[in-house]
Amino acid sequence: MKEKEILLEQYKLYVESAEKVSDRRQSANNYFLTLNSVLVAFSGYLTSFTFQIWHIIIAVAGICISFLWLLTLKSCRNLNSGKFKIIHSLEKKLPAKLFKDEWDCLEKGENKKTYLKLSVVEQGVPIIFFVLYILIIVIMILPLLGWTI
Image (cartoon, rainbow, N blue to C red):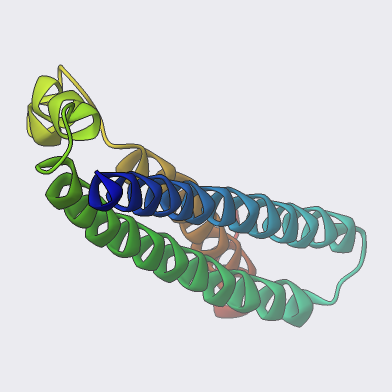
């Protein structure tokens, strides 16, 4: 009986650690969203000046930040995937397999009509910023090449 109690406590701790990864991911999302929003706002402020090079510098910085954001999301997704494999493994020794059963009900995320993975959805935001920064660079470079917008 003592072994079952220890297993249950380990399970609880491990589920909590998976939740902490999700919390850290959300904090990172908030940080990167704020940082990108500030960069875009500052770039908008600079439109009243003729310092086009600053728009390009800000856009390059934004591209780097968006890339780091995507890497952070990938890292969190991989870490949580590993954690849930261990949680599913621990659940084999418990009376109820709640996380595994839930994942099975969601067809393991393979059916997009049943469940769209949040990690896939949230990648859209840094990609949108990435595209926005590319557009800023193009818009700033075109006049230098003699093109008018």
